[in-house]
Image (cartoon, rainbow, N blue to C red; front, side, top):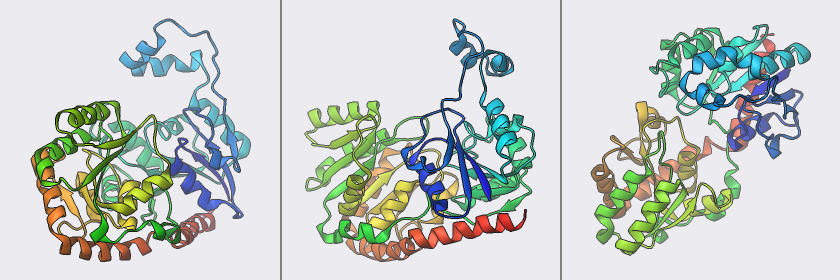
Length: 381
């Protein structure tokens, strides 16, 4: 089957698409943002450096696009080659059996302007539907997409229900991790016994959805109760780095961190998950974060936000993790931190439960099911 993936150049896209490597499928990749192709996808038929100007850049063009997006969208085809224009050209040329878009706002909207002479699959990522469904600039576009796609993929049950409410009437595919499965054997050496874990690991996103500052404010409330624990914040945004420096100076907390601009390697991060007693991540909107799955696999106790009840697909509160009900409430988060430090028996039983879940995330197990889904689509041609 000839498949055109329309996606951003993230590791999550690469991991998903690489499940099709060394199969009979002919794989093409296009990024509507025209970023450099991910190095792990250079085995595919890819298009890059396609965005060209038709007219010289106009002074104030960027501001115009921000302030008047509808008007700018109308004049954009006269100014430069648009993603939808290039997509239309590629689709006409290669005649794909399936166009599969990963992520809604930057990658899928453009397909609405392409003459639809193809089967269309879409993978709902993160906040695609949950955060944007009621926003004026997005609501109708989302409904238009969902009314036209033939196959719906997602990593959680929340988005299945939401897609149907928003007009999806095609074929729902099984729920899969957004980046495919994990090589569990590779990670076993990283896993440390619960009693030896003295690390609190924090996801450092604080932006349009992330709420890492609230986690740090929770740490401030309990600093005196966790003197024996190391704290590490990974992928910290600048505002979070500033907060860490302030805390280290005023409270002598000695929090270590890696920033979004100078991140540690994935293997080093996984090693930290394997040493962490608890891993905390909080946001006001998300799907199933890969870091949550890595927390489960590597045996850290998850304290995770639950937007739209999405995290309940994997975490049962008080059984194999704690669910944050209000990401803006540092007091609630601080209480969950103290409980996770004190309730060793809960953490040990959670570890055993999560190791069973981890088996369902094994790479070959997931890949086989994913390939079966594509085979079912191929059989329908």
